[in-house]
Length: 420
Image (cartoon, rainbow, N blue to C red; front, side, top):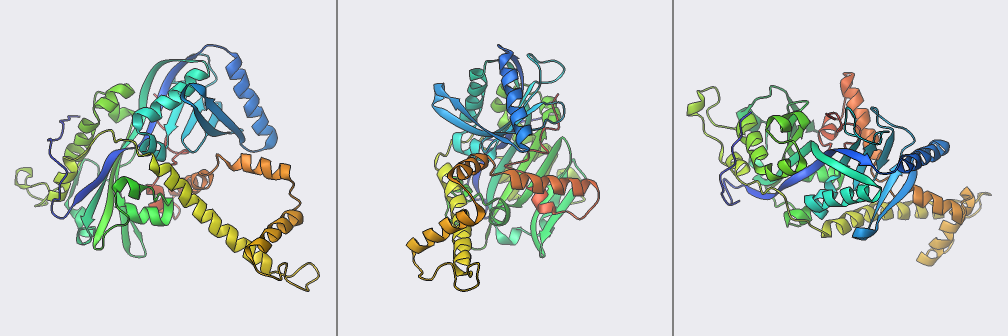
C-alpha cells in the first residue's frame, strides 16, 4: 500500500457540498497486560459465576476515583473466542483472557463505543478505560489498534444522491452491495473483510434505526435542509491493513489519521469522470475532492451529546409508559364492571401504576433489582438483531442489509475478528 497525506485545503462549499463532521466513529484496542495480583482474576470469576447462577448478565459498577468517573457494565455469564470474561456497557465493551500476562494473543480487548468517542473525544475516551484497567492492577505493556472506523458526514444536494452516482465509482474492491428500502436508496457497502467502506444516508439511518439525534449537535444544524442529504462516508479498517500502512501502536495510528484517510479516499476508493477511459483522462468529481481533502483527524469532544442521547431515550420510554398506563386505566376490573380509573387526572394515573405493581406482584426490592439489571443493557436488543442478521446473511437467507451495514455503535458480535 502507498499513502500520501491530503492537501491542506479548507472545508468549503464545493459543487453544493459541505462537510458537517469527520473523525473516528469506532475504535477497538488490543492490549498486552500483566496483572499485579491473581486475586483480580479470581474476582472476575466470582462475577461470572454470579451471572451464571442468575442465568443472565450481572450488573457491575466500576469506579475510577482518580478521574472521579463511574462506568456501568453487564458481566456476561459466558465467554467467547477464548476470552473467558465479557463486560459490556454503554461506553465500552471489554474481553479479558484468563492469563496473568499476554501469551499468543492480546489478553485484553477493548471496544470504545461511537457516542463515547464523539462525546469525550478520542484521547480522553482511551485514557478513561486505560486508567480503569490500571486501577484494577494492570500493567499495560502495549496498546495496538485492532479496528478503527474513520468517517465523514457531508451535506450533498439531493439530486446527487441516486444510483447513477455509484456508476462513477473506482475501487480496489469489486464487492458492492446496494441497500434500498421502498425504492429509496439508503446506502451502498463496498468491500468485505479487512477493509470495507460504506456510503449511506446518515439522517435516514438516525431516524429509522439508531436514533442518534445527538449527531445534529455535532453537525451544528437542527435538521437537514430541504433538497439536501446528510451522507456518511465511512471506512472500516481491521488490524491487517492498518499494519500494512505502517502503523502498529495506537499512538502511530492516531498520529496518521489523515494519511489513512488519504489512502482510503485516493487509492482504495474514488469517484471520477469518464468511466472506461484511461486513468489519465479521468478527473475526480468535485464533491469527492472535498471528501479527500477535508478530513480533520481527531475531533474535539462534544459534551452536550450525552444529555441529548439520554433525553432522546427518555422521550421514547416516556411515550411508551404513557401509552401503557392509559391503556391499563381504560380496562375493566377483574369483575368486568368498571375501568381501573373512573376519574381521569395525572394524579389518578399514579394509582393505576400502583395497581399495576400489585397485579404483577412487584415489591420495592424487585423494582430495585430490575432497574440495576437494566442500567447497562441499552444496546442488547440491537446486538441480538444485528447478530441475527449476520447469521442469516452467512446462511444465504433474506436479510435486513441496511441494518447490517450500519453496524456502528454496537458491533459487539462482529468487530473483534482480528486479534493478532
